[in-house]
Image (cartoon, rainbow, N blue to C red; front, side, top):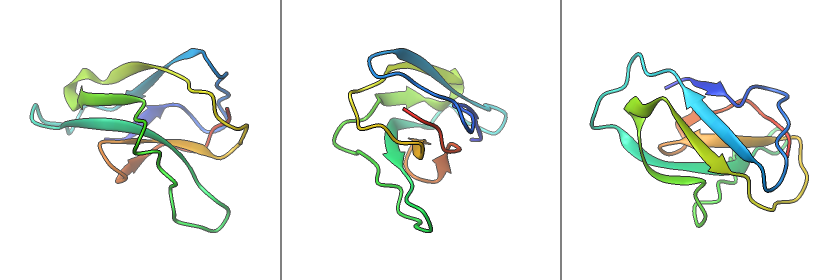
Length: 95
């Protein structure tokens, strides 16, 4: 599903609570999985997903959103979130 938030250029603060949301138009009840934080390097397709520490686990795609705690990570302006694996990624944002 298309990610609605975070949007390109959004800024999250470490230890804050943020909502990740997505379009539920084409999802089915059996779609569920983790949500990962990652980052995109310049010119690289590697998403550097932190699969060892998902932001959320076993999330139902029909929910349309989930609230997460922003972990303590290094400052970057190229973070992404990935829904249910790496096929659905957000635009880059900052933490």
